Length: 142
Image 1 (cartoon, helix red, strand yellow):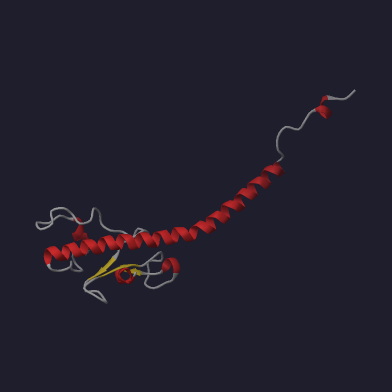
Image 2 (tube, rainbow, N blue to C red; image 1 turned 90 degrees about the horizontal axis):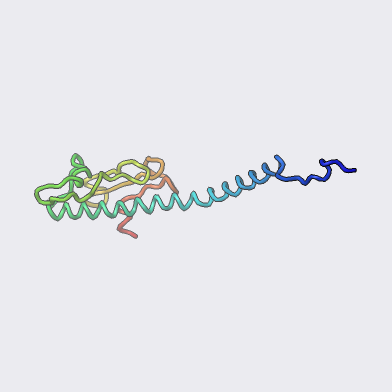
């Protein structure tokens, strides 16, 4: 006679089999993360360019109403408040770049009446890739 233990079928996975599946899933997740990261950085740069274009438009509207651009002391914050000439704010909130920092506003600018700068992921002047600076001057050339 055979005992019950020899006729019983194995029901489930061993620890080794489960670990192999977890390692494979981890490797796939790592590959996806590496491939997607470049797109995420490019999306943040494109978002900064789009936001800067909106801010430049608001600055042009301010210039049309007042015949001047905001001073460095007024900064971009003056675009978020209504005035007697422009009752509705030109921007709904104080502008912040995709990395959560304020845009640098200079009046006068290096190549025009004003300059708007986003210092990229590293928040420092210069850099390449995700750390590259984006300027309102760059918007004119594209």
